Length: 245
Length: 202
Image 1 (tube, rainbow over the protein chains, first blue to last red):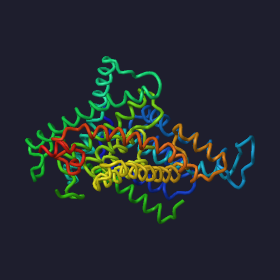
Image 2 (image 1 turned 90 degrees about the vertical axis):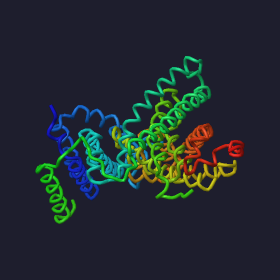
Image 3 (image 1 turned 120 degrees about the vertical axis):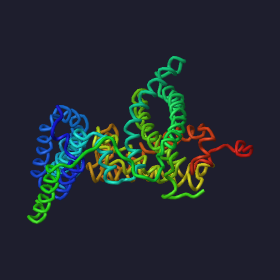
């Protein structure tokens, strides 16, 4: 059920991500980027998240890469641009630039997608707490992640309520624009009232107490985690000693 | 009241950060629901920066883009834009630019230039001038007219950014004005937004 990769310590996964980003930043030939992209796909295949990975990838990265090719190859004017039709021209330099740029974007963003798909926020927060990051920071992170879906739900309720009271949400741009304030206003005021209550609750439970809290949820680094981190470091050293490709 | 990096992160201000981030997300969703042609996705950053100061604003901008980045990594580098908006809006609020019309106009102008500049830097360096949104058509039009890449991206950002900045700012300003005084008074930067009559009675 639970995949072994999910159990890796968050900092281990972060180390992998950092290694990939550093290697990708310093490499100039596209082949390295393709290898890194393949590595990210392999990792998400091993984590059993390949479907979700590809879904996110095509939704966000694919469009931008496509646009980069179109603009760099056909529209940006380079020295070797050959006009085809009106403002459209073909340029080899543009093609080379866009391959370099796009392969790097693909390599870096795919490893980031992988990281967020295999690491739960709970784990990240627990790891941060263990690393003695102030609990104000960890609390804000976890509160943010929890609050976003809650607020989305609340805003849907408010939208429905305001529609029932006769606020027009269709029509010309100006009409739709006017609908924005009555939808946003109640949302902000409700949420600010809630923060007041939240502050009282936190104070009552000793959030500001200057001692270290004990956590119910615990995670441990295993030998595998150390091995992966060491492998990443060795890989980086070898990469820079051997001369960046 | 003491202000600055060390004093701004009180519990009350801290609780505003998640609210600001979710307001950004909700604002964006509302825009898509209402099919508006602009991006009203920085209301939360402006709001938090105005009432809780520049550093909390920077945090809000950064966290917002990281949360978006979990679904779409392209959003992460644009955190720089949100962070600069938070920082500048916070400092303008601190030096009471938002209390009179001239200050508001000056602040909006500078905010537009700053956000367009950072957005152009991110767009050109990270993505070769492309954002994957509809505004790319404007950039392409500038390029086709024979302008340089830098120039085109910056001009596009100024054009679309002016409308976005004004709308984002106007909505968050209206909302801030409606926040009850008993809440504003607890925040380090909230007092200028309380109406004078209330202050007189208090």
